Length: 98
Image (cartoon, rainbow, N blue to C red; front, side, top):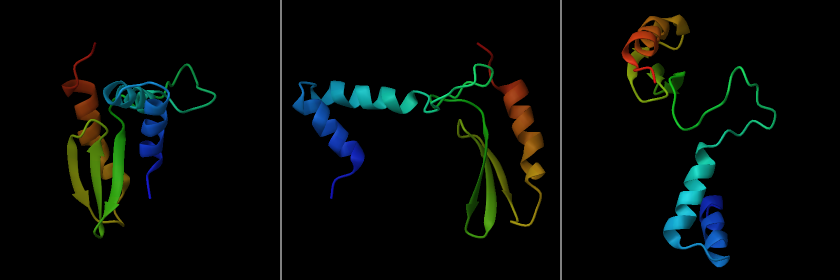
């Protein structure tokens, strides 16, 4: 069974894209916003960013930034605010502004 990604790559190659250019088009599509009615004040970006991510893993909550910076782990019954000070410090002072 092929994945949807593999099928899209094959379809692009079938209409004339080479393997590298087909992969580049698919990668570009992955980075584009998916919101059908985007809010101009809060633009979606999949190309990077610094959103706080909280995941459940092996009986604990794991905090990290969208860019990959880790903020530690805590119990599932703890407040999610546990990760906020580290994330705010990271996103407000450590991330270079462009």
